[in-house]
Length: 124
Length: 107
Image 1: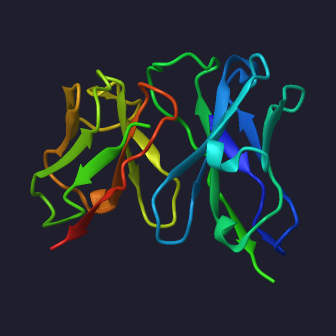
Image 2: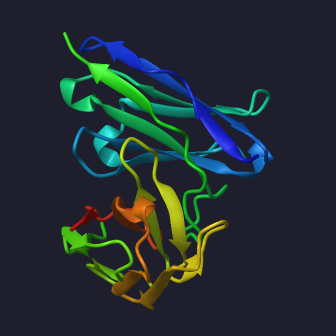
């Protein structure tokens, strides 16, 4: 079936980096893009950015620009999120979600499916 | 950046009752709006896309309506699994913002 399976929980110290993976199955990976969304404890959803497995293009939210890198590996059908210079307010659950392959707004459809989430805790 | 405002923040209802959730955009998003349900401890799930289209596998008790700046998600008869948080998301212009969520709780 169509699914995204993410890597396990991480505990990191401030100033370090984390890399979260999102492995796809059940569909043609290279025909899609992938968005990353995070949710701090007790808060709503924050879109972080998007990466295309179709052409490698990326688009990041300005508040994370310079600290975030999103990539894909079509040979393993896996999307990756790397976040650097971690701070305590980066503590959140990080979700990947299947998205449109091209960064051409407006975009029809929605994020479907989502990965199960990866909890990242940043603490000294 | 388009701001989405959801109301009410919390909706207290009983199983079997009808739920009406609102999402208002700070400027027109045409019909490029999606709705998601997030159960506790789980990832969100797409319910409605393009304002009124049910996603694959979503039961008919869920319906979406609206265009421009005002949108509604209606759940015709609440099932136990529907007590959750609901988010709207606009897909009209970058960045694709989410509303702050509406919690549907058991009365």
